[in-house]
Structures are given as structure tokens and as C-alpha cells.
Length: 226
Image 1: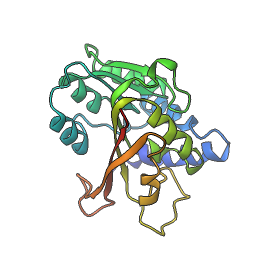
Image 2 (image 1 turned 120 degrees about the vertical axis):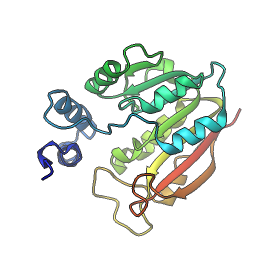
Image 3 (image 1 turned 180 degrees about the horizontal axis):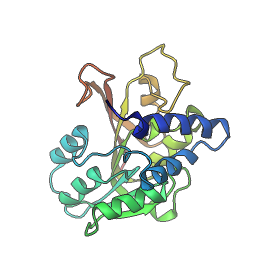
Image 4 (image 1 turned 180 degrees about the vertical axis):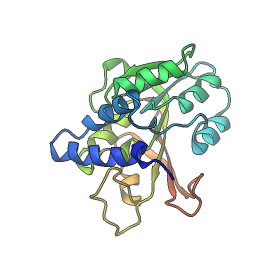
């Protein structure tokens, strides 16, 4: 029988709901990762391979020749390590110190700059800095009240001419988006990731790579004017 007491997803849902109710909507990230560090639950978002839409996009871009990339929500590093392997000078940040400790332990010799940082309060050296920004499931981990600020922060990471690859789970038009985490995005909300001098280049809907009959994915590419 499956041991549900180690289910990080269930704990994330509980902690996220409590944090939002308490008016501290990002608190639950460190609470979840620190629970994993104490071995109370399995490691969240634990994958050794890059997420398939990220792998496809990065591979299609080819050798980066030292251009700069950022991963928002470093997690356990699979996407950041792929970027580094393709020649990107990569920074991957997470709001949770315990998450950053975990990924540094997993890749102790990595060239990636793994650091603690908050998307909603970015350090100055990350602003206007990156040719490619990869964001997988981070925006949907924030409640709708923070979405406009999160979208603006995501765009602010881009250097002129840079692009964002954003991957989220689909919320169908008309479905309730108020309950989370995660707080899924519909098409209009995905389109709203663009703004100012950052335009939406493409928005595609595709099957979930590991659950083809489950909730599909949005894959968006946005570009800042050069």
C-alpha cells in the first residue's frame, strides 16, 4: 500500500492554503522544502531529467556561446543543468533556502549559480540581465492576487531581445481558478504574461508529458523587444 504520509503534494496544498489565509502567500515554499530536508516528506518536484518542453526548446536554440539564462524556481536543478550543458551562463534561483541547499548538494560541482532570491523582490543584478528565462509551474504556485506582480517580475529579468519560456498547467475557460495551490491559468491569463515591451510570440497547448490523459500544458514563448 502506498505511504501517503510522505506525499509532498498533499502537504503543499495544505501549507499553501494556510499561508494564503494568513496573508503570507509565499511562506509555504520554505515550509515544504524544509519538511523534505527533515525527511518528513519526499523531495518536491523531484526529477533528474529536464522538463520535456524545456529540453525541446533549449535543444532547438543550440549552443548558447556564453549567453545568460535564468531558471525561476530552481527546484532540484534538472532544467538549469541542461542549460549549462548547452553553454548558457546559468543562474537558478528559489525563494526557499532549503531548496537551494538541496540542489547544491545534488550538483556540488555544477557551474550553475544556484542562489536564494524572491521573484517578487528581485536583486538588482538579476534585472534586465538574461537572454533566456525558463519558468515552469512557478507562476501557478502563486495566488491570483500576485499574478500581475509575478508576470511583471518575470518580464523584468529579460535583457533586450531576450525571451521567456513559460510552462503552466491548463485551466479551461470557465473553470474555477480560485482554489489552490496550484492556481491554474486559462488562455487569457497566459496571454497576460506579456506586457510593455515584452510580446507573446507563441502560445501552444500540448498533452502532459507523463500523464497524456491528464491536465494538459500551456507552453508560451515571450520576447522582449531588442
